[in-house]
Image (tube, rainbow over all chains, first blue to last red; front, side, top):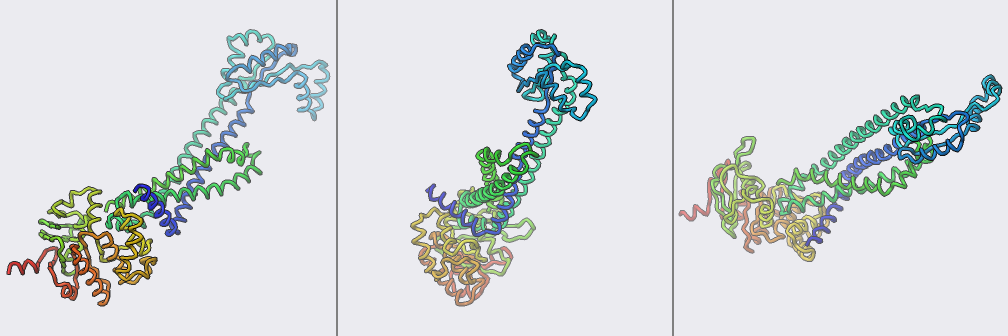
Length: 307
Length: 226
């Protein structure tokens, strides 16, 4: 009997969905807007994370060495630093590379270049650029280089200066910016999601309000509450499923365009991200769509079942 | 079978629909309840169907208090009662066939029973050609006959017919009364409510008169007293 009832409920839900086409279009449209907002939020978070990672990668601790610092000692320090759990990357720039870069930067400044030529010897020492895995970890790395540690003690003779203190203000500012951006992102996400859910719930409630008379008749001819309710749940799930389909149809071309034209601006190829996360993002959106449709229908029908 | 004991019904707006009603309907009876609009006839039906609760008193169905029924018990009660509503109350988005099939599905009938019984009952009320029409595509008389078909499909023990001829011409009225008589002959208890004096003559069995929420006459009882 269970399977017969299930078959009847699904058939009835599908027939109601088809016959109340105007209401179904409206409900699908509103649900599509909700799911578009949800998908948009996922992509926005991806863009935000990529932007943060991009900005983070531009911040580092620069360790300047004296002009006579032996290269093998600098490289040994480099490999020591790479072993630290906080360190993401260490880049060595030799004294020769430094002077070339300096000449390049001042290629139009004749006086500076002349002064450099007059010095004769290369005034620059080597340089290590240390990037942390997280911007909050620069303090710990600076402590290793400047504090009371073996690394600091054995290299203090060759280190000319560490520019962490100059960068500290920028790093602190970046940390607070990242924190604010994440918080604003989360709050706006929550607000948008709640508003969309309320609009969708109201639309489904309205569609069921129109069927309230029908619900009463069904109860009076002897249908149980669950038998009346179930086709509406199927209808709600169908709204969610069709809206999910439309949302995907919308985001494929949108992300493709963004991937083609806006990758440099956004710092992430949205199309590649969308395709590679299709299962998780789209799957989650489908579950959200089905659940929202079902829960909205369930809450809306409950009001009119009390006949 | 159905018993009203000191039943009163007052709506939240203060309107008194029933006042101290005592009534006993036996199994297999054909009872006609007459009275002008507002006499409380429809409220009486609503109380039997547990669509409304009495403000005072008790409504019993086979000695069980309807008001004390939970949801499942109310559903079971309604499956034993077929109802023809004054304003038809058909499911607008279902065809004639589906309207009747729904009542059978709700009662847990099998697909085979539905496929065999629905065309048969539609033929009985002369709607075999309107099987796949929606209620909006049917005339008043056809809607009423469809409502009758839905009410009798599960062979109920009681048939409540609330002004079943209110929207019909005389030919359709005669047809409906004939159908109700046949159903009663098969052993179903019929409770017919009407304000139409012509109908009272046509039915002519136990007649209960109501006015302003009170029972003012019960012909069978009168005969018994005489």
